[in-house]
Length: 257
Image 1 (spheres, one colour):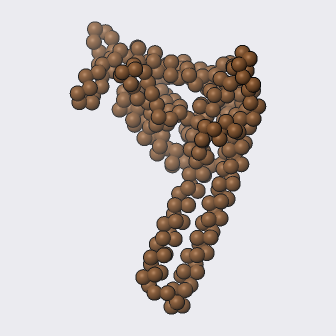
Image 2 (tube, one colour):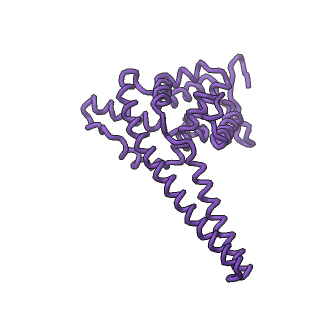
Image 3 (cartoon, rainbow, N blue to C red):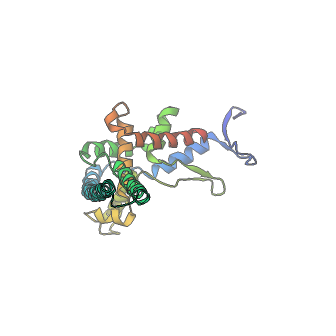
């Protein structure tokens, strides 16, 4: 929408009747991105701390994968036993069908969870370096990008999109990419240490526990980073990542950003 040479965003929801100046909306959004920028001075320390976090998560990731594989193996044994008993006439067809369906459903659920864990959190130092470098100038990177680049960046930082709160005149989001959230929090704690307001932790794995980060969720965010940095590499872009990212981008597009 354009009025008197000034561009506006117009809410298309019936009964909304909300128009906002494009310049002011972009300024607000850049302010939101700045909350997840880091200072140019401490990246090496932040990268080391983030490496500690990802190392711990990688270990948890492997343990969870082994646990699920063991569960799947036990269910397969039960399924084999059930089929054997049915083949020898030890159980009726109805019993075989009932418990066979239950075992298949349980195994499928485990397989889905294993798929979510695909793409181990390994060889992450290069991605951490590129990611932290990007965090030095998130706001200006978004401002200088074209519409496609802006959508991709927003899908990366805010996987579930953003919404505008008309009462508070501010943006809000349901979830921030765990990479940006962790890096921003670590940077904030380092600032507090420099000011003598806290004894900054050197091991940030407890920080992950306090934040309640689920391994599959962080694995997805990690893959999303790969998709952003290496869009042409199929090895770095699982179908799950693409489908969720495409959904986020579609929401962004309909919101006019």
